[in-house]
Length: 115
Image (cartoon, rainbow, N blue to C red; front, top):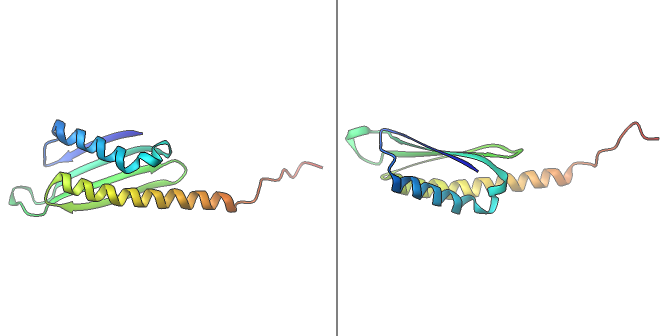
């Protein structure tokens, strides 16, 4: 899994980077082999005005399943990430489950040239 971390309006500290890496591994651990890349983006929505204003957006690309995107806004990057990671775990599991179900329903390939 390729992991990209971006920030807008706040600093990406070494401890935040480490927390993101650990949290993504925990959230996607069961499905890591089916995830191509993950982008985690933090944005300080209100700037210096403060308040509940840190938005965490996570976009994960599932092999053969497209993108899964979740957003959470909380008072700190850590809490926003934790909540978003929980949502991502659920969404990715659901997406992969649907893909497996769809593959089982597909009829086997029949070569029309045989005969």
